[in-house]
Image (tube, rainbow, N blue to C red; front, side, top):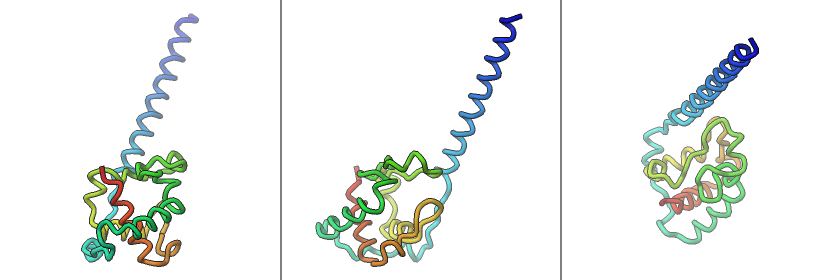
Length: 142
């Protein structure tokens, strides 16, 4: 009788663990797959920062350390100290998928934000500074 009771408890515990694991994986996949549309007019905007502009990249790096690093990590891998507590994946900015976005798309998303991603057109009101952030994010390319 004791063996049967232990077996039932084991099966119930295992079933609960499976349900919880599947639920966590499903919500992680859902957060990752949520589309983030950018208006075509914004996608087409070209950065005013010239490629390789070291002053802009340096400014972007300073702004990154102050505003972005805590979630996105020091190298844009999405592994900052706050990342684990987020409901949405902060992304890997070194990835081919991220680097394929136009500068306008990155600028728009940085400026407007959504969900846990703050609206930075208020936190960093100078558009030139946000463009410098875009230039810095381009340095994460693998």
